[in-house]
Image (cartoon, rainbow, N blue to C red):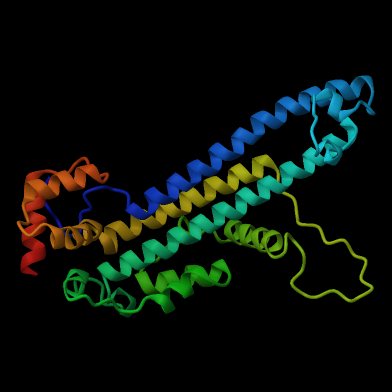
Length: 290
């Protein structure tokens, strides 16, 4: 593969690889709980058929100083376990939404570093590599906030304006993303409690919302497809090979020889198995001469 400034060495960005790793982590942790919980639920339900007041400590062979904290009967334990399952599903959603927003922040910065004038409607008029070599980065914080704050309709509109895309429906399925944002805010802000300070005599018990396992899985899929669509667009339109150019920019500081074979080894060791000497020679020549 020969070097091309706007053809990425790897189809997916470093940012989305990190996002995918975090989603895998959520899945592993969540399903580890599900397996354990379903086994315990089976035992509890079988015991409940015989006697709903069966001792939980006896059923699960629980002992130690904290045994009194466990709901005393299988009936009580099953209710508490259902509530715990909902709490963990909401927690998983909060984490997934946070990772999606972290991905957005990172890929937006990468795109704006690579194509700094795209935000002004002049995409590719100035190669970000020129600024990178001079240690200059146009501040991205204001644009980043426009794409990671407020409701998703506003974020999608800002993405269209900044990056010149006409159809954001796959990148930003607004209705579902907005529902996730509302659930996340409801749960995360004091575990579902309103941010408004209650009256002294307010007896209302504010719940934290509910989410089923099927809905959680649907939402995780929505976030993955959203990130994938954003990545596909920005890698082709704005980023191209900039991530690898950025890696070379840092690598050359400690490698004065600027040897293509050595840089190829560096790329392969850091997740770019398709790198070859010819590609690295082209990249180094581009960087040094721009």
